[in-house]
Amino acid sequence: MSVGRRAVVPSGAGLAPAPDGAPPARPRGHPRMRTLFIAGDSTAAQKYADAAPETGWGMALPFFLHRGVRVANHAADGRSTRSFLDEGRLEAVLAALRPGDLLLIQFGHNDQKVADPTRHTEPWTAYQDNLRVFVEGARSRGALPVLATSVERRGFDVDGTALRTLGAYPAAMRETAHDADVPLLDIEALSLALWQRLGPEATTTYFNRTATGQDDTRFNPPGAIEVARLVVAELLRTHVLAPRETRRVDDHVPAGLITWPGHPSAASEFEESRS
Image (tube, rainbow, N blue to C red; front, side, top):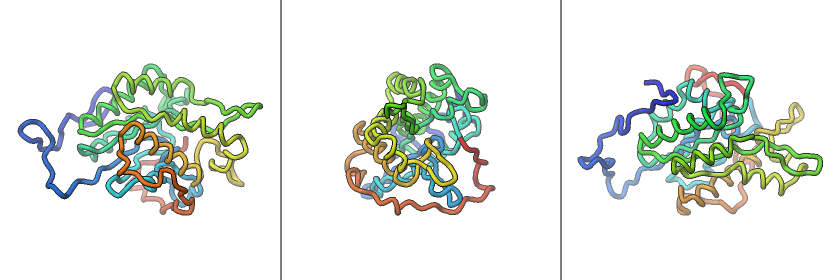
């Protein structure tokens, strides 16, 4: 079935619950690896060799997680809550989710695009409705939904004050998280504070600014690593992850650990577009 804004995969689809309705027991001594799925946009997405040094923060997340938690990065360039749903991407994520997995949901940058009706959503109506579809879909699979406000762009006023660029979308997500009783990672607030602390010059070393382009939205390896660090710190603060599931949270992670694989074949991937 296609997952629309008001339809989700039925609870327990494809599972064999125990007689009391609980998930089937797993053999002792062989705990299943948990998977953290990411649904989001280009700020988190996997990048390939032709895009280097651009780096999504989802590429750096595994450096902060122990082996019992793996990352399945389904974030895609240029996507909003609307286009991610309309393209069937959530349906693919839900098909892979298993009880105990996590679905981290971060959108906002492309929901802002008023001139593009295939992506734009109003923050207090369609955006919140779409977020609830993600939340309900994850819960229907026995997974834990986690909402994350969008990471801020790099922007400063003439006095060197870091600017908020995401409009009402972070506030709308905070309200949705509260109303739906979903853990909230406030990456917008934390990244804004980080950019302010670093200042206009130092922040340029975190973004994808090259001789051929000055990108103040997407990251290079150091920037992706630091945003991933914020994400893990929030996962710990909200008790979504336990300390034993994380590593290196306060340690230096060398940018040289980031690698860019060759691009997957067109037959196995959705066509990508830039945000």
